[in-house]
Each structure stands twice: as C-alpha cells, then as structure tokens.
Image (cartoon, rainbow, N blue to C red; front, side, top):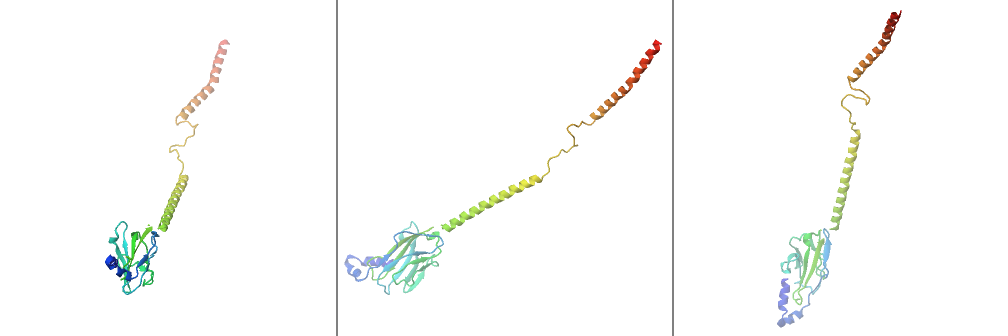
Length: 234
C-alpha cells in the first residue's frame, strides 16, 4: 500500500514521464461477492500483470465488515522471494502459487470461521510500475454451515422420537401394572343380598317354635272341651 501511495505522488502532471516509463500494474479480482460455508477452504482469486522484478511485493490484508479500508490488518506478505504470514489468520493463510511471480496471487484460507467474513485486499506493488495502485477488493461471507443445520435438525428429530418412545413405554407399563392390581373387596363379613342381620334370625326362630307349639296344643284343648260337654249331657 505504501508503494501505491508513492506511485500516486510520482504520477503528477510534472512527472508524468516517470509513470509512462514503467508498465502499469493491473490487478483483477472477482466482481461478485464470495460466499462459503463454515469449515471449508476459500480461494480468493487475484491475478495481476506487471513486469516482475527485484522490487515485486504482494500484500494480502483484511477489513472487518463496516470498517474503512484504512483499518485493514495484514494477513501475509511476499517480498524478496519470501512469504511472511502474519496476524491471527497466519496459520490458515497461504498462497495458491508460491512464489506468486507468474501473475497469480490467489489467497487460500482454510477452516473458514464466521470471523473471516469481511473484505480482503490484494495489493501488488512493483516499482517503478506506479501507473495504477494495483489494489483489488474481494468480499467474503462465511455461512454459520448447511451440514451443521442438518445435524441439528437430525438431533432434534432423534430427541423427539426418544421422548415419544419413553412416554409410550411408561404408558404401557402403567396399564400392565394396573391390570395386575386386585379388585377392591369389602373388609367386613361376606354377606349375601338375601341374608338377614344377626339376632333377627334368632327372633324369627323363636316365633316359629312358638307358633308350632300352639298348633300342637290346640287339638288337645278342643278334645277336652268336647268331652266335658258330653259328660254334662249324659
């Protein structure tokens, strides 16, 4: 980026011949934003045209969403034939072609995370090619992934089936236990519907015996009476 600023300064009206003396740096990046699922590897395509020399330098940097480009944070440098990853993405960032001296400066970023969402800057510097700033911008969006949503849905379905199975098992077991329980019985003496209460049967027996005795005595009484009447007549 510093070389681009110097180039813009040198390409003034008075020093236009210096700009024309070198080949302009042309950087090409995708015009459409890039969307990738979380956990995958993204290839941020960047190609350039310039006369590669000893002063060739490449820088990739990153800007969080909603922030100005001036707050960009470096991801990696390539200069003096050496690659220097830096920053929080250093262990996941690399170049598709290393060294990137064949016109391809594509960045590879592995194990994508939601925090990788933002704008990526591909900056190619090759003094004295100062006719353009050699900068390309790529917007990347990392999607929170479809595999994760599918796994979450599957887990939810399995939990629902498990709960239903447990509920059905408990209901069946409750019904079986209920069938095994004995029916309610009367705690007192077993009585029939036509049975009489204690004491009542005894009174009835006494009355029956009395009636029987009276019936047995009645003929003798009548016989005595008849005999007495006959005596009087005689």
